[in-house]
Length: 144
Image (cartoon, rainbow, N blue to C red):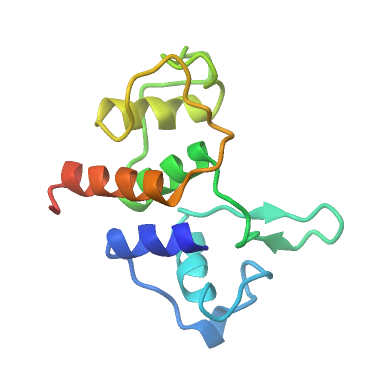
């Protein structure tokens, strides 16, 4: 939820009133989280998870964001939809495959992440890395 708020604020996206939609889209949000996360969900920036037991959509706001989720969130919030890649495209990173390839390759192409042999997509994204990716996106967008 913290990462969602940081990204939504950086990209100047509007929040939603909390009372109206608090549990409408994602059922596990606190009062401070709902305006940011539900807005991201409505804008197709945030997907959430479907609970297999109940079928209810969840966000899991207190979980760590992994590195690929964080990069995708930043790109999507700034309106980027990577094109020119499909699931057969081989990434420069040996541990990036499938759906994540287009997001990570686009992030590399515009300078959000650095070249390396591995990206470690499942590792937690630290606040420092999140801030760095957001600032680089703002620089790329010409906002700073």
